[in-house]
Amino acid sequence: MSGRTITRLALAALSALALAACVQVNVHGDPPPPGAPMPDPSPLRVASYNVSLFDEDTGGLVQRLALGNTQAQRIAAVLQKMRPDIVLLNEFDHDPEGRAADLFQRSYLEQPQPGGGEPLHYPYRYLAPVNTGVPSGLDLDGNGSIGGEGRERGNDAWGYGLHPGQYGMLLLSRHPIDAEQARTFQLLKWSAMPGARRPLDPEAGRPFHSDAVWRELRLSSKSHWDVPVRTPLGVVHVLASHPTPPAFDGPEKRNVLRNHDEIRLWREYLTPAAGQATWLCDDAGRCGGLDPDARFVILGDLNSDPVDGAGDQAAIVSLIEHPRVLPHPAPRSEGAALAADIDPVNAGHRGTHAHDTGRFGPRVGNLRLDYALPSTGFRLAGSGVFWPPPGHPDESIAAASDHHLVWVDLLP
Image (cartoon, rainbow, N blue to C red):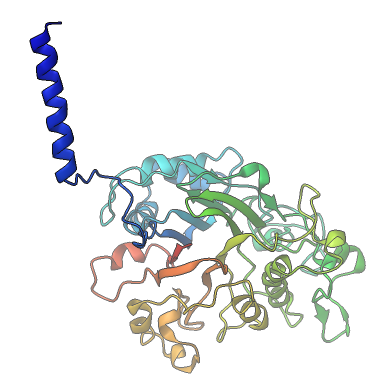
């Protein structure tokens, strides 16, 4: 290298140093000045949606999804529009191979839908067996026979259903699911719960179920899941369930009582107490409740309105007001408020109409049954119910189910 070249390089370096001394250069990604507030991370949107994607025949949902299904297209459009990071789908028929979940992801969520948004991909999912439609081999409805056809067969299943997996659950997530740490409570006996509300025959003055049946009866009509998800906000435990409706029974009120105790199971799970190691055991044999420091979101169609309806509201009220549940206003929608005028029965309801999550016919009316209840440790950035008002362009896709998607946006 010549001396002239070395001189030119030295002069260039000195010029660059001089420029740096008098010009401040901001590079994308530089930290903010000392003392400046850090921007909030993007909110984590978590949702619950009873999609009513079930069929009366084994494999029926798989066949419908394979052929192309208008209802599934509209459900997918709602999800594409709302774009939850984590969503629990209730009443999505379970099949052991996960074919229905694969089809719904590939042929519906990942395809542009009329009225929807951009294609939506969930890399992670969780599905597991449920009690609905699984024969118990016992006379659970007390009619003197076991099994049978149609409704009689369903009444003697561990959870009402016409085939195993009907009305199942499916959890979809944009963030990794820790399936190895997931806990399920499909097999937990109802009688194991301290203070279980055993149904009584009011005329005979004795328990509705024999002691032999009561010892075997499972608490969960579908299942209860604790599914950890590794999100940008940290690990979030999704507590998912779908208790039986408090209806379709007799004076013994066995479904009312079961609904109460299915909801109460989450209250017990969140409340450390002596003796849990002897009864609160999951299907893998691990016992005890949720770690006191764990953050969670309770998701599901819990089939209980805190004010109206046929259920025993004590359980859902105590869950909403649990010390570990973040106090927050109930999600609401303009559509629910306006829909209250359609059925006269709603005039007798005491709850706030805007909080309703579904319309259940002229005899029942509109109720708040679907929940997304975050734990303390989060901040609420927003919430809502996807229930558009009459005449809104989204009204058609929202009508795909008698329930509406409920969502919360969470920040650390």
